[in-house]
Image 1: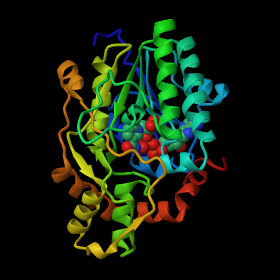
Image 2: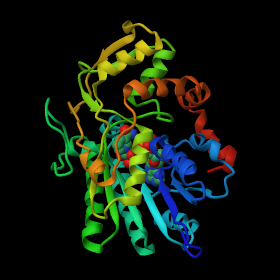
Image 3: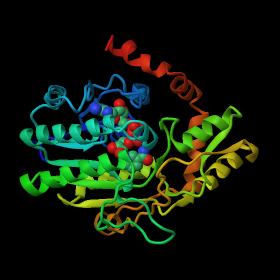
Image 4: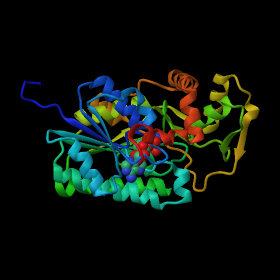
Length: 345
Ligand SMILES: NC(=O)c1ccc[n+]([C@@H]2O[C@H](COP(=O)([O-])OP(=O)(O)OC[C@H]3O[C@@H](n4cnc5c(N)ncnc54)[C@H](O)[C@@H]3O)[C@@H](O)[C@H]2O)c1
């Protein structure tokens, strides 16, 4: 970088959520001088305690706002200043079970919010926009085969349908306006700071309290699990070297049925399998996802560094060594943290 080059500011949406906060931590580690503006509405899934260690850093700015509201997005863009800007868009409603209860918040944030953000970023001008999507947009697989970037989209839940719609809006912005966006489609993540409504932290938390571990259906739904650090490094690679307009699949070569994961967690925690309780299956539950991530490896030199053997024990240790984080999320006390730091909302 020569003396006149200004390093880009990063606008991260949803940076107080699970993957977003892990990504902000990665930026603090790998790009300590970068200015990071985090726009987050702090829904139930947003937790500023995930970013506690970064408090007080002058180059990390939190903007409390909603991507569906142009004025909030404008405020966040103003906080980014006038220099070069890169955007990583995580903000979303992300839990399939909640989308089955009520799809509307998913359409609002994932579809409308993405369009509001795209319009504002296009008017402002950005170097790169990474839209963080999911393998769930491809639908469900049988016992063989894998999703490639060319697999037709066939979403089955209101969550995945709203994410697929947002992918199409990003595609349209690229095609119509030459907007410099890439789309990533990743498999299921696990790791620190994941809200304990999702499979792995829920099982760790329940087993820790000797509570029942609810397993949907026959427990044989297969997902390809990726450690969140690997996902964040993949997003970094796309941000730095991805080709605008391209879709990149991200996966862990780590396929497991839910039941096997639950058994592994119980084994690592020294708890009995009698804690497992089979419950009525999720309506429309996709049977299997598997990702072909060879394009990431071929074009960007990225491949996962972790698997369950290495990262499931790491994840369990993280939850065991952060009992207060878990307890405050489970009790809802984490929601008061914003007021304590920033005053009333
Ligand atoms: N968790 C996974 O396994 C996984 C896998 C692949 C892709 N993804 C995608 O990655 C992204 C992040 O997932 P996650 O698991 O970290 O989600 P999360 O639910 O943990 O976090 C979402 C964050 O977005 C914020 N948010 C929600 N609505 C908002 C709005 N209208 N305006 C501003 N902020 C808002 C929330 O407050 C929260 O901080 C999502 O787009 C999701 O679709 C997740």
